[in-house]
Length: 106
Image (tube, rainbow, N blue to C red; front, side, top):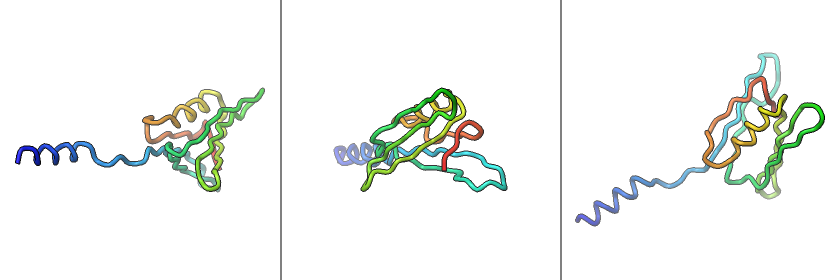
């Protein structure tokens, strides 16, 4: 009886792991047509790279494992915003990042 109770309490304490998702969101003007939210499965990120040129925008390029692979790009006005997006792609980072006014995606 004691062993059965212990097993039940351990299972309840460690439920099945959910996917590690990141939601990028941005606020757009009412007259604009744009994507306002992007949900990224961090477990499917194959590569992420930050490209910078001599002037903005800075581009965070993400390749997701799929059939075929999926590529995403997030453009940022400044390097700090791009690094924030880049860091948010790491596992166990906060689940939501608002990039309004700093970055945009289509």
